[in-house]
Image (cartoon, rainbow over all chains, first blue to last red; front, side, top):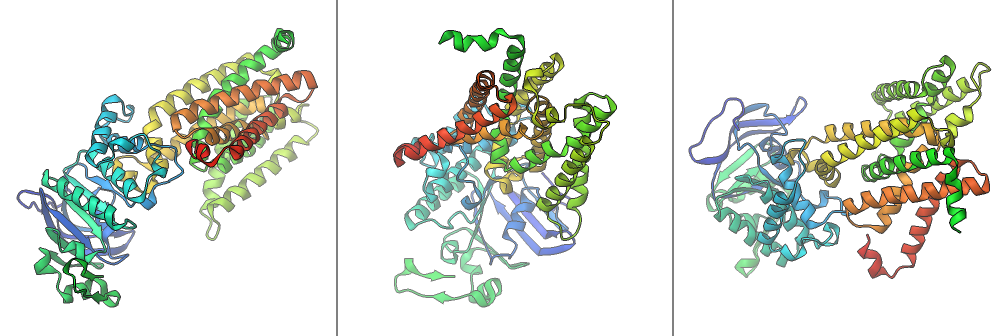
Length: 251
Length: 278
C-alpha cells in the first residue's frame, strides 16, 4: 500500500521518507527516513514517548502521516505488548492466534476450520502447539508473548511490528523469543522491534533511534555511538560495562 | 410430581409466558456475555431506565409501547451524547445525570391522573400478559441477536481481548461497540415488555455472570448463559404460579439465585478445580 507522496526504496518491504506524525495538531515524531528489506531485523530504540508506538501506528495505517511518505504492505503483522491483553478473557491460545485471520476475511465471515488450522500451525511454529487449548491467561508471560507472535504470523504479512516484546520476560523466555524472531526474518519477513535493550539491538541488522525525531538509522556497529545514545535517551542514559562481553548492558 | 410440573402449562397464559421467557433467555443470555466482558452492564441498565418516559408517553397517547420505548432510547442516547460533551463532566457522570433525569421524568409522567392504569406493568413488566405481537418481536429479537453475534463473533473477541491492537488486526473498535450497543438497545426494548423497566437488566447480566463462573471458553459461556437464563426463568414461572408472587420479580429472583448457587459451588471447589473453570 502506498501513502501520499511515495518514495520507493528498491527491494524494501517497508520504508519512510521525511515522515512526520502526531495526534490532532501536535507532531510527536518528525524527520523519519528508513527502509527495511526482506529478512532484516530492525531494532527501534527510544525512550517512552519517543515516538516508537506512533511510528507503528503509521505503519499499520491507523495514523495518517502529517508529512513525508510511507511505503508499506497492505497489512502488517502486529505483535502488541502482552500487558495490553485481558487475561480474564475466556479464550484459548488457539482462539487468540486465530484472531490474526480476521483482517483477511470479509466482514460477514468468521474464522473457520481453515483459519484455525493456520493458527495451530503458527502455534507450532512458535513452539506452543501443545498449549493450543490452554487458556491464554493461564500461560506464562513468555508463552503469552509467543502466542501474540503466532497471531502476527497468522496475519500472513511480510512485515511484522513488535512492540517491546521482551518486556517482562525472564532471560530464558527472552532468548527463546529472540531465536524465534531470527527464524522469522530468515524466512523473508522484515521485522521492526521496539525495544529498550541496547545490548540486544547490537545483535540486530539495523537500528532506528527515535526521540521525537529520528536520531540515527543504520547498522548497529556504525549507529550505536555514545553520542547517538545520549541524544536518544538524554539524561536517562546510564552505561554499565561488565567484564563478560555477553553481560554488557547499556540502558 | 409430574402433575406438579405439568399443571402450570395447562393454562394458555403460562404457555405464552413460557415461550416469552425461553426466547428472552436465548437472546439475553447470549448477548449478556458480551455485555459483561465489554463492561456495558451500567449502560444496559441505563438504557432500560431511560426509556421509561417514552413508554409512559406512549401509554398516555395510546401508541404502541414498543414505539414509545424506541423513541425513549433514541432521546436518551442523544441526551447522553450531548451531556458527555460538557466540559468537566465525564461520560459516567453524564450517563448518570441523564438517566436519573429521564427516570424521574418517567415517574412524574406516570403519576399524572391521565395515565391509564398499569404503571406497575411498565416498571415490573407483565410476562403473564404477553401478546402475540410481543412473542413475535421476541422471536425476531432472537433471530437478530443470534445472527449478529455469530457474524460478529471473531471481531467481538478481537476488540474485547485487546481494544488497543484491534485496528492493527483490521477491526474497528468503534463499529463493534456501536453494533453491540444497538443489539443491547433492541434487547432491552423488546424484553422490557415482558420483564419491565426495572427488572429487564437481570436477564442480561445474571445468566452471563453465572455462566462466567462455570465456563472458561466464550462459546461454552454463550450456550451456558442462555441455558441458565431459560432454566431460571422457568423456575421463576413455577415460583410465581405456586407461591402467587409477581412473575417478573420471581424470574429476576431466580436468576440471581442461580448466580449465588454457582458462586457458592465455585467457592467450595478445591482451587485446582476452580482454576479449570476460570
